Amino acid sequence: MQTETLQPSKLFVSLEIRDIVPSMGQKSDLIRWFFGTAATVLVIGTLLIGYWVTEAVENGVKKNAISIKAKFVADVISPLVQDLQDRPALEDDSRAELNQLFGQGLLKTEIILVQIWTPNGIIAYSNDPNVIGRIFNQTDGMKLALSGQTYAEFDNVLDELSIDETLRTAPLLEIYTPLRSEATGQVIGVVELYADGTALRALLVETRTHGLVIVGAVALAMLGAIFLVVYQGAETIAQQRRALDNKVIELSGLLDQNRILARRVKKANLKLAELNESALRRISADLHDGPLQLLSFAGLRLESANPSGGPVDLHPIKQTVEDAMREIRQICRGLSLPEISEWNLATVVRTAIDNHEKRTGIEVSQILSEPLPSLPLAAKTTVYRLVQETLNNGVHHGRCSHQKVTVAIEDKILRVEVSDDGIGFDPTARTSGLGLAGLKERINSLGGEFLLETAENNGTSVVMLLPVEFAKDAA
Image 1 (cartoon, rainbow, N blue to C red):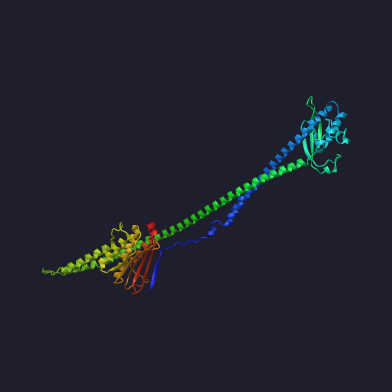
Image 2 (cartoon, one colour):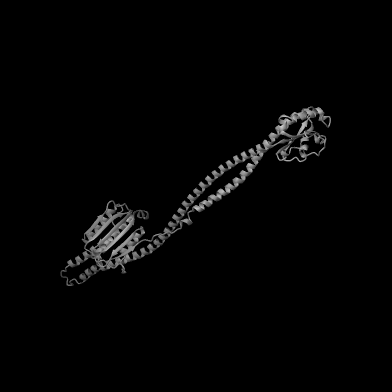
């Protein structure tokens, strides 16, 4: 037995998903780019801010410590150097008190070297007796102190002074602070101090370290927050891109389907025109070969009636006219369609079967599985024409003695099968008939499949497979 399968065109879209949906590598590159840029800006900004903050804190600590130390020393020394406002040197009693002051207690341990200058650059007092009375050029610190300001800076080496060798590598704090007259408030001298700055330097280093640690911790927290934001942003972008690509794929598929449907519509229009012409030719042939021949025969009988005016036997003529009228009615019934818009699918199928049985007298077996789906008018019309046409073909062309109609739902697919035990035919042979071709076009237009199974002397089976949801959309 030979089988012919007629199917509508199907769409096959082959796309490389890795070319559309961003891969993990692309996502990682996006994260690295955003995070790298943000991290670079943040690190540079953090370094600048950290340097500025620690420098400001360090300067504040240093200025505060120096101010306290300079004010303390100036307040202690000022009462003992008031002689400088009248003479360029100190009295012996004043020197003795200064020696006693800087030779004991906290000042002895904190102050490495102390020198008192007159505004003329003469050293009026020093805990290094070798330089008393000598004149030196004014330094920048001394000039600033003579103007009434305090100057301080770290100085690690004092080669020109006689100090302990162990202190030459220690961080020494050099301080210049003005000495003022208690009576007028004018600057009468400058005290130059060299204090051990180890503790202050350690405090500054600790302050700088703490500042950098705090700024670094804040920077790390910000980097972590930025990473989370960038990661979530990249994930969101990836999800949106995947969704967009899926939409693109879907739209591309719809565009391809539209192009296919447009071609099918064009082809169907051409085929419809051919079917209409064939239908007109078939109606013409049926009228010519059937009723017209019978009416012609009746006309000949009337012409051959007895010309002498004797009685004429009209019964054969009447019988011929009745046969012609019966064939015309059958042709009309085959062309017309009953009012099936309000019928369910089972009623449509049973009506087509009943009409066929009344017209031919051949009993048709029917199997209708319940429940059957609700279909739109276009789909019900197609089912009606399929049952009508295939049953009619089985009687007129297949010369069958038994026919069977089966309607069922299989995996949301409506299956309608009409079979008979007739003589069958060769499906590869070219015929002038248009019934099966028209049915195939109808079914294809609804997105279904038309299956024909037949062979000579082995019966015929015609099957329609119609996706129920597609039929509803197509209607």
